[in-house]
Amino acid sequence: MKAGLPPCLLGAAAALALPPTNFWWLLAVIVPAALWLFKAQQAKSLFKQFLFGWLFGFGYFLAALHWI
Image (tube, rainbow, N blue to C red):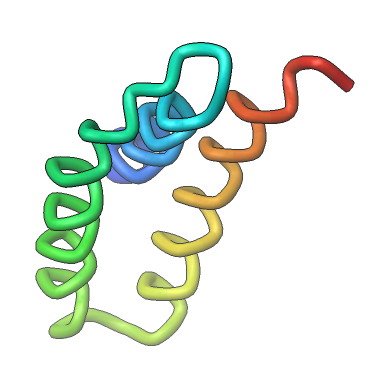
């Protein structure tokens, strides 16, 4: 499960760009880091690429939708 932690953390950090924190400038670091990690997954299977995107989105929505 250690391989799934970076995309989750990057997704959760991307949620900091939303109100009330408004750290929009943080996306300038998070998006290239996520794309770099995703590019490293290209040599692996299609399922691992899908899992990376899913975990990034899961971390993002888990952190962003705390008010529901």
